[in-house]
Figure 1 (cartoon, rainbow, N blue to C red):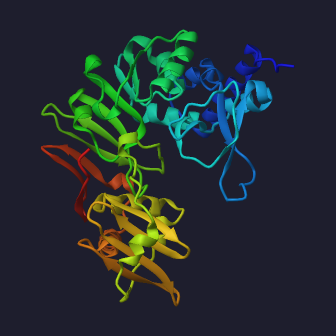
Figure 2: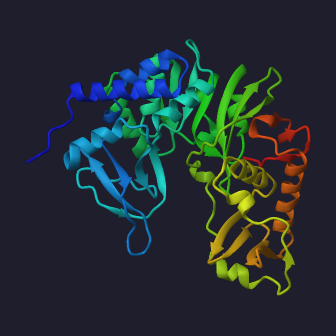
Length: 399
């Protein structure tokens, strides 16, 4: 027997509860965004998604269970109106939700972002009535629908690099009565046919700030981006574009991350053991252990981003208890091995990777460990410079 689809009545009740929960949490100070949450039927944008099982498989991989209305209507509807990110795609492969399969492991490549973060992005970008908006990363289309509900469809443009994702989002948007401008396009280059914009908001992350986005923003307009990189350090920045075509603004507080635009994803670096084989026998004591940039706290998260700015081509992995840093561009490598309560470091290649990490940590500590909001990013004249008055400036990589 086929499970009945969700009724409009119970979905509406769950939407109201979601909006009330977001209001209690202080997610959106503007009640008009909460009103949009109360109106937009999120379940229409997530006909299927994956949730992690309670236990991993025999290989230690996460088991991802498909959730649809036909499989378990109650679970599907409850998750659709929870404040949670719902994974809708792995490894760039579009699932067939009519015959969904359990997945073991895999890299998420598309999702419906948790509603509180969606609202936080729109609020932080200072989006107002009358603003023309470019959203980069349509995804499921839920965020786009909230913008259309709040601003009107005529002022919203949304792009996604994945034609299958955009097609599904378009069906849901148009089915709900929203008619934004939609296009398959690479977010690194914005969308010139609809430029210039008052606001550009990205629901994906970039290694740097693309100059095309600055060029497509009106003077006085704002760009809200998440910056990430191959060390998986992240920061958000809100840039205001000046008359001369430069853009400047602060990093925003908090620990927020988005999936990287696909062209900016970290490259495969091969077998870690092959990299470790090229290290010298001699080692020195490390002044800091890897936990300074890998601990599960906000300071380490922020410091990891600063290190990433200094070492944009570096990746970090582990082999048992050994932590390995690899630079696929220069061929440099460093290993950290625990020893007598501390760490021993070995390095090879033209860039002394851990020595550079130690320099950044030294500067950060000497500056009093400044938070993200005390850094400003300036883009223009060929520069993408991140600065704090008490630390040496760091340059983001070219996009």
